Length: 385
Image (spheres, rainbow, N blue to C red):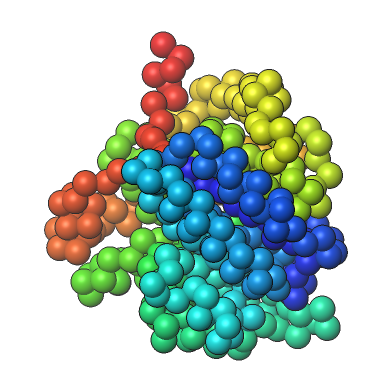
């Protein structure tokens, strides 16, 4: 199970594509945090991941520290029933200082997810301070502190119509910084045109070439979502994280105590139709069922698509980004998913034909399982039978 604490809506950056809405100060209280953690533990999970989100969660380092202490004490009281646990910090890395390193460093169980869109030129187009200054140098400095402290981190690069053509350069840049994984994430709410989708295909081909270079050199680095597309071919269906079933194994708690099925649905915490509970009352099972039923309307839209089993059209947060409504997607998702699948297949077929050792070892000589708490989806077509 993953519990995401949406620590505050405030942030020290003003990224131009941010989907969380206006930046205003509404910090989470210690009482709300404790209620959220205790509610999650009452579900008796075998594993608990606690993620800090925002805004920028490192603005409230004291609450993060308080959360770590409460989680450790609460789990310690469970005796033999205690779950394994881990912490995740979603951050722009500009506020990583000695205090943050001391809190997150070993022996603490932290992994950082850091937003870095690529080179200085690409990153500084969108990820800027309130005064409009680019943040690239500060992010890279923060990553250096994480590396020096031995804190594992993954890198998330958001691309849109203006930057999709740079994806090869972006992957090459990020791979040199020492991440355990790279995520290339589309800005689905952007204005994608036929021309920009064509630019995306070129950018993905460049990224695929860079990834193939890495495998040929003996380096196996997970690059999402291309990695998932390869697994979808090998496994015959999308590896489905728990968030894709809306609140099944992931809850996001806001400063007001509201519970959402996904952090990317919170926004300014004004969408009552997306709330699935409150820390004071628990999960609203009736409301959760209503949301899942609404989300599943997409299956009718996608019923005849030959890529259906390998596509993430089932992901509710994408519905919200694309149309504002669960169960409703647009052609933008179809074009982006088709481009991702085509590039993943081109790359995988090329390396397989070459008998590339690192690629064969990575995908064919190890067992791949869903993330803890997740499961492989049934083939979507099989559910129609």
